[in-house]
Amino acid sequence: MKLILSTSNIMTAGGPSVIRPTTSKSNVELINSLRANFLAAQQATPPASEKSNGNGNTSLPSWTKQEDDTLYIPAIDFSQHGLAEERSQYDITVKLFYLPGIPVSRRCAHTRQAIELVLKELHVDSIDLLIVSFPGILFDAEDDSEEEISSVDDGSSTEQADDFDSTIQTWRTLESLHEQGKIAQLGVAEFGSERLARFLPHTKVKPSVDQINLKDCCVVPKSLILYAKQEKIDLLTHNDCNDILPVGTTRELLGPGERGAGILASAPDASDGLQGDIETQWVVKYTAVVKDRGVVENKGYFALADVGSCVKPSQST
Image 1: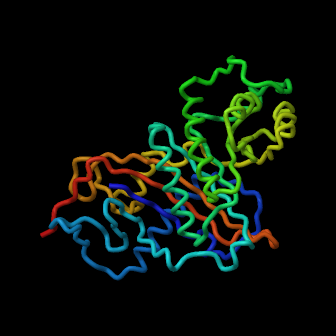
Image 2: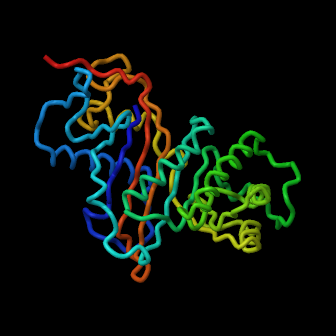
Image 3: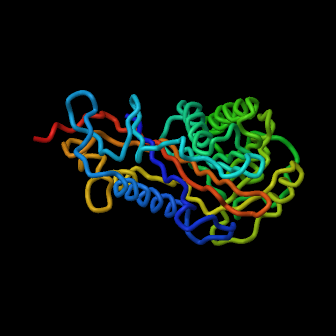
């Protein structure tokens, strides 16, 4: 069974916010926002016994919603969402995190799933910028070459060939969505000058943005500044975690106990919730900014996880 986790609009609690730097890592924001949205949904739903899954077994809390093999946590009424003003008034940026350990062969479907959810949530036909974060790629200012790179890949990169091929394969899906008009611009995360120089010759649609995590360092390498300027790529910074939603964290969020949502069983072979190993597939973050005011009106996250065996708990007596 697929589990779609959502935060809803995290700006609604405190109202729209002017963009400002933050010291909180995005996985803290994600986890706290998911937990808060689960609790709000539970409190807004009248007490009821667990819903039947149609097979004679109890399964799902009443504040969730199942459609075919997908469970929305919490239930989402997309008709109630959307932007307050005309689409032209917004810059919509989306960042998609491909998570470690997930086969590259799934990324095409995952990309389309994530983008479609954001489009439905915001009631729009396209986004302005999609930034993708590949697992295992971490920017290190000290490792970036100090020499300006003006030539294509010479084959000396330390990046493994299969990893590079998977990056190109994934980029083809993004280019397809760009061609369909769903994404205006594409971006990457954590690419140094050497990786960019190797990557760009294989693209039809070049990334317009390179988003890097400087951690405690505040100096962007000169080589990257020069190369990005040469290729007309904007350099942005972020404080996102690469492994933004580990499996253990997901199980804690959805498991039993005081801080869990009560969706998953306490153990893979227990009968107090959905049974099976959980595997987090991807996370997507979206932000809609009102252009003329620089105000974040809508911001949120979706995440997809799979429960392996999907054995339903028995009917309570």
